[in-house]
Amino acid sequence: MRIDMGDQLPTEAVSQQLTNDTQFMFQFYKPCFQFYAPSPNIDTHMSPHRLQQSLIAALHRCPLLLGRFVVHADQTMSLTYDPQNPNLPTLEFQSTELTYSELKSQGFAYSLCQHHNMDSAIPDGAIRRSGDDQPMRMIKVTYLRDGGVVMFAMTNHVAFDGNAMFNFLAYWAQCNAGHGVELPVDLQPVSNKILTDADQTSDTSTDTAQSPAEISVDTTRSPTEIATMITRAVPRGTMVPCVYSITIQDLCKLKQRVEASGELQEGEWVSSNNVLTALVAQCVARANMRAHVYEHGPWNVFQALDMRRPLGLPLRGLGSPIILAECNASADHVLHPDHLPALARSVRMSVDTYTPEYLRNAMHWMHTTYAGLARNGVDEPWRHFWFSALNTNRRCVGVSCMNRIPIYDADFGAGRPVMARTFNPRPNYVIVFPGPPGETTAYDSLHLYVTLERPAMDALRADTEWSSVCTLVSEF
Image 1: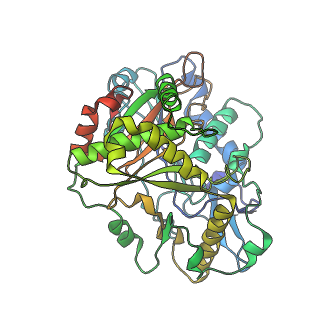
Image 2: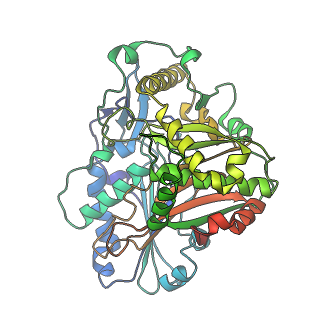
Image 3: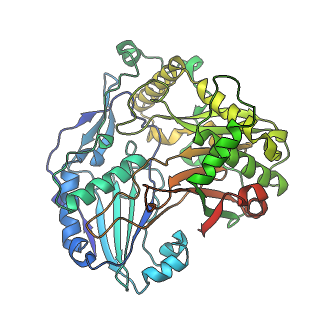
């Protein structure tokens, strides 16, 4: 059963201006499965009627999720609610003969859920007014034969990123449980004044001098041509996505090893994310070179950085402004595990080079460039931007640590999800999610979503440094 939610949404809602700390250049569609164990409370708390009614309540309180991105004449930008939006949300219900036990025995594999049609098609990146594209929010609930539930959710939006999506799912769950909670701050634009008034009103959209090296834009090519240009050509079916797990305890030991190595100078420090980035960079780059997928040579190593952190701003609000902090690593530094402390230090030093002035300039360039494209009639301007480090023709490897997102907070009244799965199609770009909740902590492990060409994945599995701390949870 599929329910189009259009006639159950507000006929009008207040549009809201996007503040200058909202990243809106890219299309977000983080697909995710959440798995709920069989429970006697599912029939009551997760029935189709109850889920539908609570979703309507959540969407009524969060109309920005259904807003279109608009650039106005004065260069301000907003999410404008339009009840005639043809890409309105959908909610689907179905049942399957598959059991929770079978899913668990297969490591909750994403592909197994796909095989049983539990997901929705990933959008192509376009949001068309003609209505022939995917809705802005897609939810599919599958009831398993032995009483479990699989919930699939995905956004198709230019401002609601992965963090916002999981906050929305948790908020929907609270509405379903009958809690009269306020809309979380991560579902609202928050005015954090990154840019000055002069920055926001000046027009330097053609000023390439301030263009950050980490972000590229090209309007001379179509989005399809850009995707082809920055994607390494590989035979169909050779990409292998896997999920690995590393315990918080093992990550702490790696950090202690770096701290005890003598590599850090007085006053220097590294975070756990810096150390994890260094480990991933070493092992993935080493696997690619040993498998002859990439030639022997230096690598660019990057760690995703929320720009608000070095700016001293609260880490909250809609659409985290991200930049990929890059550093260079020699072939020797990635080939030899003994250089892990030195590489972790390089990652930390790279992050520290992103000064408030540089980041304000980067945000200024992004805003003025985007506004200029929109004013000049460029269709779907978000599809003309990309992070330079994600060009897979280059030797680049890095990590995006999303280990603070509330992926396991969506308790609809029948318990929290016991496992979650997403899909990472980008090779050499490792996404880090929290693992399932521990007995005494929110989580005691991290899940690493790794996609590599098959020879490189085989080499990664054979890497003793990797296998000593990372365990294969599931293949795609």
